[in-house]
Amino acid sequence: MASSNQVPTDRQRRRHLQSREEILDAALDVMDDAGVAALNLTEVARRVGLRQPSLYQYFDSKTAVYDGLFERGMRGHLAVLRDAAAGVAPGLATLRAMMIATVRYSVEHPVLSHLLFTRSVPGFNPSEQAYRPSLEVVALTRAALSTAVARGELCASADSEQGLGLLIALTGGVASQQLVNDPGTGFDQGRYVPLIEPALDMYALYFAPQGGVRELARRTAP
Amino acid sequence: MASSNQVPTDRQRRRHLQSREEILDAALDVMDDAGVAALNLTEVARRVGLRQPSLYQYFDSKTAVYDGLFERGMRGHLAVLRDAAAGVAPGLATLRAMMIATVRYSVEHPVLSHLLFTRSVPGFNPSEQAYRPSLEVVALTRAALSTAVARGELCASADSEQGLGLLIALTGGVASQQLVNDPGTGFDQGRYVPLIEPALDMYALYFAPQGGVRELARRTAP
DNA sequence: GTCTATAGGATGATAGAC
DNA sequence: GTCTATCATCCTATAGAC
Image (cartoon, rainbow over all chains, first blue to last red; front, side):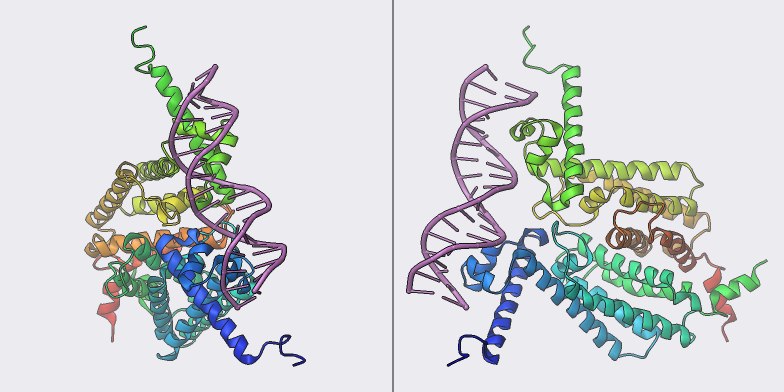
């Protein structure tokens, strides 16, 4: 009895975390209906079957809810990238799989990608912990670029800030165009999703290895 | 005296329109400080030297203010594109100038580009009139693509929905990366702005005309 | 942990005097 | 056209009972 109401049991801890996740689910629903910047704790509480003040047992503030979603989104993105990379050969094939996975993740989680990849919520800045997974995402991408160069699939200049920046710009550009111009459509039906493959071809051509097309063009120039 | 308080004079009309523009200026300032979704009519009125209810002489609602800004942004974008196209040769050089102008416009007007190119304001949808200039933007871009093909600077497949989509994705991707990852930095200092040139090179290489590098690579393949 | 009650603000929009 | 006054909400967050 000494510690019965002092230290929570594992079971209590699990239930608490489970409730947090349910609240985050509801918050996602609300934002999906009303817009990312229109998160409303009263509506979240209603959907989860609680009164609004009860949410403060699970989150210290509205910003903390945003932060929880941000962390969930970043972890999710990292997870699908790892999955994508695990299923294919290293190097260029991995880059391709990662780009496709990122566009798919963005299209299938429009609210999260708005929160992750834009500055659409006025007061909100993610905590260091919530942001951390994205460092791993960048590290994975750099590693895949480096491997593609080592395997002779891309020229050395691809493994640079410029090469990384162009890849990210292409990926984000395709995903953003799909979300803005064809919202509500899934990955398989999206009108702009098919731009992924030519975008990747374009990238691979531009960073073709030495002896590739650019070198050929230079050598055969008049 | 018969019509003195019925039909406004030209001078009155001009002053009215001028006040509208001042209100839009103040609204831009507010959004620049607090975020695009945090537009606040009381603060706008304060900055323009009026009381909040007086704004309703110039705009029917808060949404109408957003719409006025949207139209201004679209007209501005169209104007810089026309300027950019007017100063260079037709075809590929025009495409290059238009892409640079678009990234510059986005970086120099971050609030407007957020409003124009994302869905960051929950309830807001632009009116047909406000949206109209963007149709002209697309028409200009298509024309430049078509001209570049006709001049033999790009292969025929560039003048397609795919060619247009890739160009827009590249442009928006670079601009978006600059705004998200390096906000507050100008066009000339932006760390991601220099991606424009390689992005254009990448595009031109991918859609190189027949007899260009891709054709060469095919012919000299083992 | 959940509730009721409420503090404490902010905000969009309208009515009506001047 | 501009103002004061005010309506009508809506929302985050806290206090304290159970």
